[in-house]
Image (cartoon, rainbow, N blue to C red; front, top):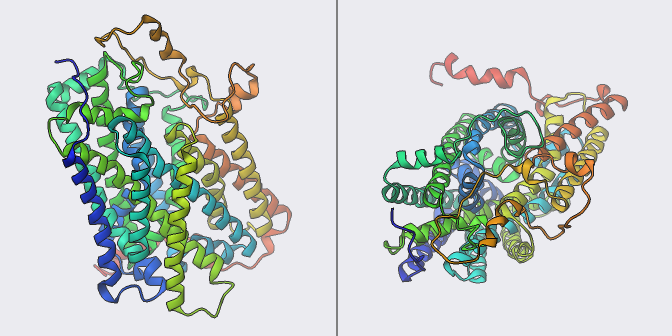
Length: 573
């Protein structure tokens, strides 16, 4: 194998491919702004008029949570911690089943636009407002990270202009969300999934060609201890083991799929409940495909750099940059392909950001404007929804500027979801699964879960866990034919994973830090959900929750499950 040559740079064609992706996305937005009479009502704008079918919705669900954080984060995750990440395949399965069989039936039969409407139907206005506020804060924070993360990584490797990219993505997103509403968001997502898969596949194929076949890549990975699928250590402090991924991962992702507005809004926009469930199950296949691609990319990274790790050798300054580095390394002879990969990373961003903007607009209109301004006509609500899209687009670009001050990305993004998503999932689970829960229990439970989640989450940011909890695998640089001094060799083990704003150094470690704050980041959500559920149940029981009158549509019943089998009864009805 020849030594890695000088890394390529971006050429005109790469910019052309990238710009093409942005233009096509914008065109889809313009098309849906005028197709079929445009966006007459806020329901058309926010829900696609409830006429969507399963396939585009499924692809759209896949796209919106496979952001650039996935495209850049997962391969470097596999490169550093091994392929145990692929256990997430099981997690995705559980998550989709829980979303389709527990949350979807209730949301669908109530026919709501905002998931937080459910909280008012089931509890009261106050609970609804708490849920809405938490969601808006969480989503704006997360979206900022999602816009900024890929821009930074790509900027440092390819010299792609940083703020140019941030503003371009933000503006294009806001543009097609504002013009085309949910339909545009869903169809641009379908296009962007295509681009993401194309970007991944081109990297995998070229890596396999250069390294001499997939079997070589797997062999290298096996010899480097990267195929560590079976780690059944039940210790909740270790970052990724079979149990943390199955249990913690299921809670974290359920908070995204089961109750997050930007996902629920999509599958509720399907024309029938059967289509909605189908879209979730098809989306599972999409999730598996993208997971497979990103794990293979991670193994290809290892195979290519097993004796010369660019991160330790200071060729890239953060693990997120390994993937773009590999792309410029192996695809430099094919003008336009590195551009395709950048388009792939940005498609991830665009699809996530657009769904966030649309969801934020929906929540604001449904939860904060409609209940208080009853007299507004549908036409004006539609205009207000569009105005909200513009506003939130601008806010998210602003957040990206703030995110530029924050530390390592994948972790930050997931821990925000864990800290806020966990308690919210607990709140919905309380409403749907516990018939005697009441609004006092719900509020107290939500607060308790939130406080505890924040405590662990912020503690973990300030005092990051020790390396032996993280278990990074060995990286070598003996193969680098460069002449820097030998002292650098020691830095591999010392490097902390997160470099965050608040970090404190050489501090005396206490049992609290070593146990509670070192909890695997996947368990943040689990802790939040379980605390909310437990406290909610106890408080509801002690405040007479059994005596309330409940609308049976607000809870999950036997009929909801059994109605899955109606298809067989009616022939093919």
